[in-house]
Length: 615
Image 1 (tube, rainbow, N blue to C red):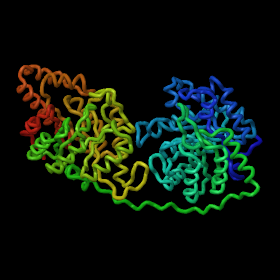
Image 2 (image 1 turned 120 degrees about the vertical axis):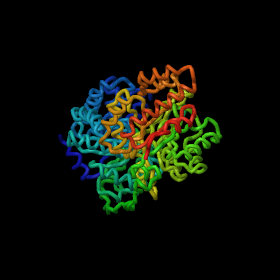
Image 3 (image 1 turned 180 degrees about the horizontal axis):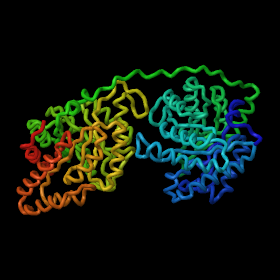
Image 4 (image 1 turned 60 degrees about the vertical axis):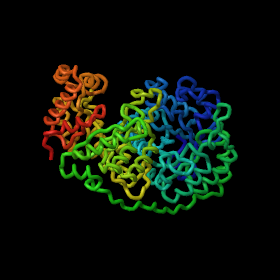
């Protein structure tokens, strides 16, 4: 090829990329609800025309029309089986437009699914998904790879690692930022640049979301913190919705002026993102051409980013009374009480007082069980602790809050004295009384444990210091009778790896199932709290068997309840007796018990524990 290696080209001066592909296709009549990457197969001439227009405007690097061509983004369009062809043809079209004198960058965006530590996709799996997209780009002849518009540094890191494992192509790694120059998770620019530098990419930078001025502010603030080349690719401002169309209002002249500021401030790669057109790129090229005879690369003096002060982590035994008792090998007793539907918790508080009198260690409070709307579990937990003096375990579900709301809730809960958390993914809204409600599920229980673990290390979800760390004692739920036990244990393994400190099970009825489960989790070495549910009737047992996933009431228990089904009190007494027998049989395997109070019958808790010797 006539052109030099891209890395060597960087040493010669600033490199100009092209502008937005998706918005340019939209401007040329492609509906916004279409898969733009599909055009690589259905209308390659249109895609090539956009590339050629950018090349004529003065772009030295053309990005492939493959930003969203990964398995997860293609699936809603039923195009996942065409992943290779879409990426390969995307590269070939750009290569055809670029010829031998211009560069082609294989464009790769985020997967559109959460990866660990905030989601169910492992780092290893994420790398394989990125490789699946990178390989056809390589086969199509790209000169470099550009990973762009990433929100989470961990996902961007896996993309870079994936590329390094299968090729030696130069890599540009770009995150996106907000109006304040922070990442979309709230990380300060100094944190962002440090994370980017640690990725191992050849060029690092930012693109999308914001316009030229915000990106200049980011560049001026961060340039002194890295010696790596930096890329800057702004949107043409924030889009305005006018008569149903998103219009970007930043003019080509304005972006051309900012190209000068970027160069003067030390950018090595410039270009455009959403809303930028060939005319914008032409203005940037004009700036570069007029600048070139006079400009010298600015001398960059690297300033060390200020290190965060060492955080003294709160040891387990000082997190809560529950944590201390389990650390000292005491057998602990949980009782589950559900929040009221209304604004008065008087009845629940009286029940909590009774439980405190009988020596129960903690009250366990479900958070919107079975997707029902009740008084907030946090409110009830605070009332129990302040008015009764008994410690609580607060269920916290992922269904109803995004990660920002979660972090705010958790910090507030800790400030109010809540120290024990049970991280729960949560029942989908369709299971509850409001099936038209929508779930959030930004993260699942695994991601929530990671958030709690970060807070316990004095950092928010963006990696910013929060001052004094929290001291949450973090528990997780699990189901010994899960239909797919291997998957359940895999998720439990991830929860433990994320920082779980104790385990609470779903109600135990089948002893054989429970013993099998216990043998398979022996390696965790974490306190195991077994769930016990005093069945109130045969109907209650049938409900557990048929409407609670993974819950299995053995036939012998069903027969015992069937014999007394005509007498409510005898049924309840038999259910208590069964619960006591189960607890007696599993005592050697557990470090605590969580006893539920079906229909609010707390006397059943006292009856289950009666006569059982606990340390």
